Length: 308
Length: 224
Ligand code: SF4
Ligand code: SF4
Image (cartoon, rainbow over all chains, first blue to last red; front, side, top):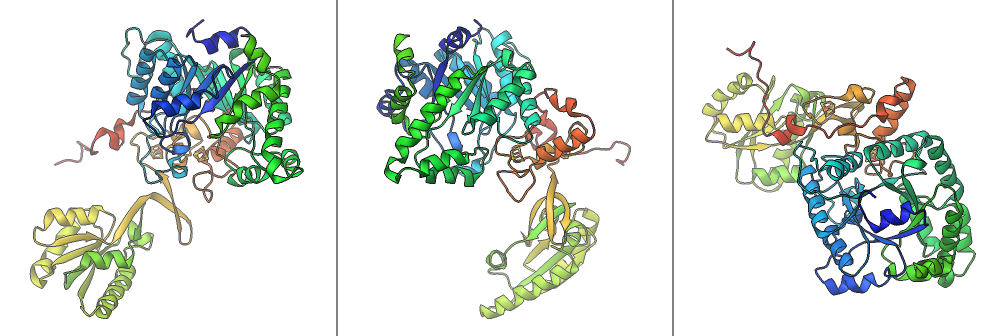
């Protein structure tokens, strides 16, 4: 056990693990965070707390992670390199360690053009691979990027993102390899809407010898409607919903599409559970945390959760 | 070269409010090549400003002059005589923003204003289209990326490959622009150098960039 987090323990024990994303609203109201937290508690193994997701201001991932910790949940603190330089990022990591946060998830973050402050200056001092590497260094030897060594820096279980659907496929595997070599313990994929393509990527990762070196969590996203699915495809930002899924959503009347979307997602979870090399799922509910308990129930994983 | 673009007439008219006798100064360097501030553009801009002011009922006198370069003090000194003799209250510089700053530092008694927006270090893509190629990070490393610059040409300056938003070879931030990582990868593959991309790159040293404070180059062998 490196970091000693619950997430690490679960993944290492070989259990199929469920994490879910929480996008903190912009609030100073602890009560609001607590009310949202009830959709996770007892349903998922860990909660990934977004860091100003989509470049829209939300309450700090570090603070919200601590609030979840206080409620007995297992937080994964996200950190993006868009807004903070290496000084601030490492400072936040030490702060997280002090608060008892043991899991971090490192990404570059969406460009601010897509957020609520499109006129902001961005930072991008380091990229996600370098951030993973910085967390690893801090975790393993207390070493900061500048060379100084801190006392009791704390250990982290480190996550990074991967895109199984980008082109060309070998470049996507090269990216995964970089993140694993930089020190990523677990990988969260882009949302999966095409199981076959995803399976192919897992296969390629296995051939590269990467599957044994990290835990793969497949991201799933319950869709609300065919319209939402088409909008995702139009945005073309690295996520693509397959024709089959759109056809299935279109096959039911509009008011029932959200229900169908949930069913599709639950089926995907079941299929992913059987996929070799996949160690869990990460639920991206896009701000609809309330669907999580039902989704877990529908996927048949509820009993497993309750048993723990 | 430095790519610049003329500011909208409306903004220039606002700057010139209250001035009735102005010298408009162009530059024969980069801004001539990118059609923003050469002899021709200075002529066109001066006429446009005169017409607009006449319409406003407050005519303006604008003299035109284009220097060989505005980024060298030697050429800026050519302005001394006209400024002394002709009673201008303002100089509008149609050069990259080095020009107006030199003029402002040299002449105490005139207002100085930029006619252009200095955009970036770039090149011509096709007639009338220019693109950015270098952020002047002060420490060029493009040999590691097949001779292409991810610091400038990736919207996030990524050094380890494309973000998830790269799609169809285009950048998610500006879909009219190629995702440079797509080009880098294709090129490295052709060169048989993909392994070079696999290597982890240390956090970049930005101290040669603006982050290190205002930059200077000193060549001891050339200083007097
Ligand atoms: S590496 Fe630096 S100097 Fe070289 S092209 Fe890119 S920004 Fe310019
Ligand atoms: S799409 Fe390509 S160029 Fe644009 S930010 Fe992502 S990696 Fe960089």
